[in-house]
Image 1 (cartoon, rainbow, N blue to C red):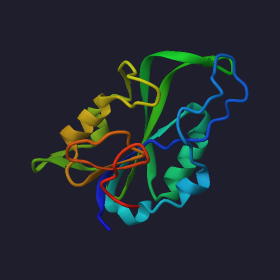
Image 2: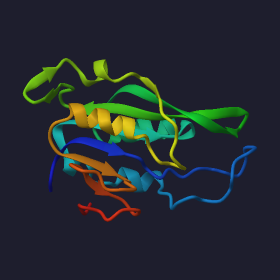
Image 3: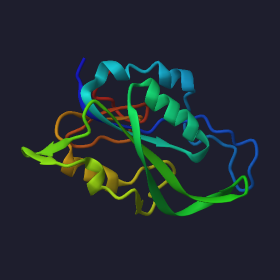
Image 4: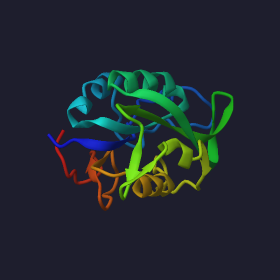
Length: 178
């Protein structure tokens, strides 16, 4: 199985919409449970030195941290995306999403043979980018990864193809089978 140096995962987390003023109860897409996520073959596709960017909702933060450890990655930082708008949920106005960065092996990145001290020095832990639709992730983060990351890259739960990336998901023609 092909090995990847960078994995971006945007799981379709199960969300409880049974309460929370202002939230729709209609599903926008099919979701997956934590057991499905734990059983994904991440150890088979991740290189011994691998970076993981794992998107999560605020309510699934604990699950995401557990999942990251289960997949063999060490949590390093939460990158906060300010979408510029949000929704009211359980007494909070939520206009941010979290992307957890973790690594397995070494956290040293290279590009064109030049060593970067660490990837984190070049990425702010908060950034602003207008949302382009429900669950559509910002191109900004992919652009930063493309500038820094060498080696094979894959997006899991992808919604579109990306040049130079393998993609897997139920909303895109997957370029790999898991």
